[in-house]
Image (cartoon, rainbow over all chains, first blue to last red; front, side, top):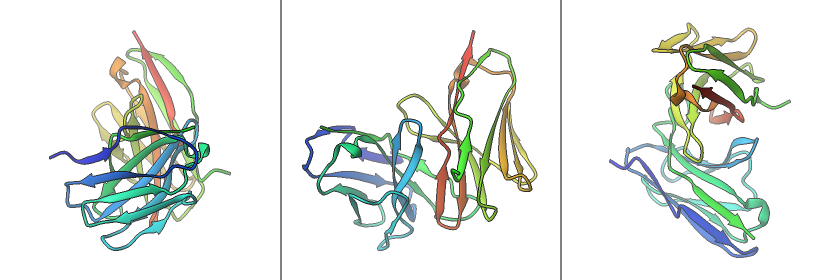
Length: 115
Length: 108
């Protein structure tokens, strides 16, 4: 039972390059999330998927796209990377998106540097 | 004003000390509240949920004050292993907002 897994762990891109961050969970959770974490700013929600087949924008969606491939997998794509997207990216999952018991489980993160 | 605000610290305390963190939130319709712990360069992990009546888990006590719109975390008998960043989380509807975190250093 791996929980939430993310690949890659580290990535360096040049400005304008594209890449996809992969996330998978084996907890049969309905909801999945992508966050970025920057120093002094806490985690900010990029996109979320309340259930398989649906995706919605979070607080900072510009420059990103997502795909909920199936119940297990939720990918984040940077079409044309910019230095402002240098950050640590976390994927998370939960049983539901709302309610008192919405504990989110996080993956280990991807450290992305855009030069 | 930020939707969720925390004192960034750092809080430097000796082992055995009691330390308290507060977190304020702006949306009175907020429904759910949590404290997460994040170790350096690691992912956040749930420490405890926060209930209206207050709740305790060993050395940790969480309180919610809806009238003043803040939640608190009290750590008693601090251990070296408590050194981490503590994030408060507030949820309303489908919106999850993390505070920027409070850093705690516990020293021998």
